[in-house]
Structure formats: structure tokens, C-alpha cells
Length: 580
Image (spheres, rainbow, N blue to C red):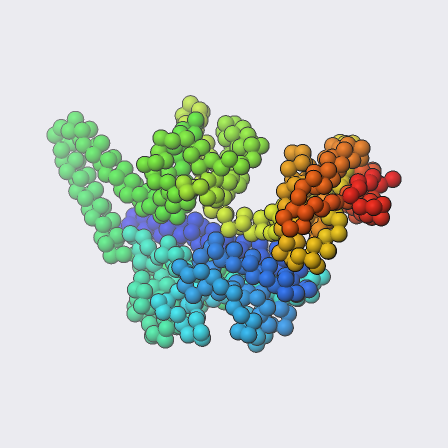
């Protein structure tokens, strides 16, 4: 029976690796990405330090947007350094819309163990709760919803200022982890309570107050080596469960292996007898034995392929990008059926806004027989966009020619939406100050390295305060939004435009000296002067222009543009001035 044991051992190891490396690990990493993206979000950082009703409203909108995109998230919170909930957005179930919890219902979590733990973590840390059941109004929600909480600390100069924490449903993860044709699957914690059991009644038995001893499923204990495989998974979950993934060989699988060996032995015996009479007859039977082995191998591959098909976004194409096959996960992500996709070019999911430089790099890489890794924006059948982090691998034939391409993708739409929210000004739809500062640093480095000119234009709407005072903030927001459109329509493709704060805007002008920037500034000034705003009428702007000098840094360049802007305001408004 040594061969059977080796076969089962290998099979168990394969199942473990597939379940943990292609399902569990990516799922946990995705959860971590959500918490980290929130921690790094400038709005979250600013709110935890300075609070304010307006900032709170914007943060609530951010959480509502996130949970609208990702319906596995049941709750998103910000908790301050004293343990008090400042913002909380909940949803009642996976299908319901998220909602903001009113301030009177926010709670003090300072006594909770998780708050005490997270408050002591380092800046880059992420905390995972135990895997448990979702609780609604201090009661376990029925039907049961397995949940994990993921939290990230917010620190300022090493001092704990608060935390972001997200509650995420894990039922789909357990569904993916829980089945294979060869083994019965279990997940237990360090105290041997069931987190996952093939009989759903016993999953999370500790929280349901259902007694289920480990001996009832493993009479000889977990140390027995007769078809039981125990693997620690705490290196992935990284929580207090210290969980183990258990595979128990199914009786049918072991019996099928025994039958295969007996059948093989019988075949060998028969063939040996026949061989003594007719050698040629043996030769004719050899392909049949080979075919049996191939069928067994195919059965094994089919099982793994089924897992990949359901949960991994994959596609195979010809060298001209004609689609040969896609996984079920690809169908779900794109909104197209396999019948609609196969035979079409991959451009069927192309988003018109794709970066051409990225696509050029993609083709150059894969055509040189190398694997390309990157992020691509796609368009679904319904017209909505989604993002994939893709690995595209060339398949090489025996003659060292590219036969086809295999694409393996992970949906990162939620992550990209968070990045967008972190860099785009919500009111105007242009870059926010944080993103503009990043661009300015990059463009200054490029300009200095290549000895190219670079200019900066600061723009301020004249007498904007009077608009808010006279007509209200709603009209003021309309003026800001329309001003953005007027300026955007008169910029060059190379210009970088963002909101600097309040009624101030900034334009970064690469490869542009101060005189050329002045011409552009006058164009913007004239366009604004001609535009008529509803209710308000005509508005004008002042512009301050500064050109990069070798000794400048970001701060000094902005200061020069600001001084020029101040001069424009003092000179009668509706003016553009170059710093001298």
C-alpha cells in the first residue's frame, strides 16, 4: 500500500497549496489592502487629527462609496485614540445599502481587547480578528454570516492617534476553501473548536454554543497518520485563532486508488500470460494502460481546473489576441458569456481610456517571450469599468515560437477606487493638493535632470467669498465646478491641473518658460472673464506665475508663484503677474 500512501500524500499537499496560495492568501491580502488604503488616505489622516463636521461628512461619503463597491464589507469605522467611534458606516446584510450610523449610537470601544492591541501596533502593521460570526445588536446574526475584522493603526510621529477597522464577510472564502472530491475539509482553531466543518451546523460551534468534540470526527486524534493531514495556516491568517487546515481522506477516494492498483495488477498478470504466447498482443494492449494513466492524470487536473475556473480570472488567446478560452470568473468580471467572448479579440473589454504606453510595454514584453505584470483598466458589457492586476504569460512551443498567451488576473477595482478617492477633489473632479504636490516633485526632478524649463501658475477666483456670502455655498460650489471646466478646456494636454484649496487652483506647465506660461495665463484669464455664471454673472481670476530656477525646491517655487499672485490681487485683480 506504499504507492497509495504516496499518492494520497502528494494529492493532499497539492490541495493544500491550491487552497491556501490561490484562494486564502490572495483573499486575506485583498482585505489587508482595503485597511491599508484607508489608513493611507489623506482624508482619513486629516480627519483623525483635526476632526470637523465637513471632514466627517466627506469621510462618511468615502466609506459609503467603498462599501457600495465592495458588498462583502459589513462595517467601516474610524476610532480615535481614546477608543471612541468617530465615524461608522454599517449595512444590515450583503444585499442592503450601507448607511451612516448616527452620532448618538456611536460607542466607546476603549475597553475592547482589539482596541488595546491595535493601539500598540507599529505604523505598518495590520491586525486580524478571530474568524467569527457577524453580530447585530449584540446578537449573532441569523442566518449566520462568518466575518473577520481587519484594522490598521493611525500614527502621527510615532504616537497612536486612532485606527480604521473594517468588518468583512468570509462566507465566499469558506465556500472556496471547503470542498474537493478527494478529501473532507476542516478548519479548527488552537483550542480545537471548529471554524469550518463540512456539516455547516458545526461550523463556529464555539459561538453557536454547540458541543462538537474533535474525537467525533477524528476518533484516533489528529496525530494519526492514516489519511489525516494537518497544516497550520496562521502564517496567512495572522490572528489569535492559530488555525489549522485539515484534510481527511475520503473513503471513496482511497477505495478508488486501491481499485486502480488491483486493476493494474490484474492487467499486468493477464498481459504477462498472454505475452508468453503472443508478444504482439502485449504490444497492442500497452496503449490501453497508458490511456488509463492519462485518464487518471486528467481527472486530477480537472479537479484543480474547476477550482481555478471558478475563482481565478483567466483567459487564453492566440498571438493576435483572439480569445480561445476564458474562465467562469472571467465571465463574471466582464459581464460577457463564454459564447460572446470566444473568437473575439481581447479588445472587446478594452476601455477607451487605457494608457497607450502601458499597452505598448505589454506587447513588447510578451512578444519577447517574457511575462508582463501590471494593472489594466477594462470595460464590462454594461459599460462600467473595472481594473485587473494581470500576469500575461507567453506559451512557447517546441520550436521556441510563441503559441499563445495566458492571462491571469485579480480584480483590484475597489483598490483603484480608493486610490482615486485619495487623489481626486470630489467637488471639481480634478487632482487634489496632495496629488498635485506629488506631480510637482516629479516634474521638477525631470526638468532639472534634463535642463528643461518648468513653470507654475497659481489661480485665485476674485472676490469668491462674496459669492458664498450672497448666494450661499451651493452656488459657490457651482462656481468652483464651472470654473474648473472653463480652465480645463483651455489648457494644453501636457499641463497638470489641480485644486490647491478653497478657491485656489494650480497649473503645472512642463517644458514651459515663464513668458510662455504668461501667454497661457492670459488665455485662462480671458476665458474666465467671458464666461457667465448662472445667478452670479461674470467672475474674474488672478494668476501668479513662477519659473523653476536651479536652486528652487517645491516650497520656494510655490512661494514665488504665491507672491506673484498677491501682486496681481493688489494690482486691481483680473490680472496675471510673473514673479521677478
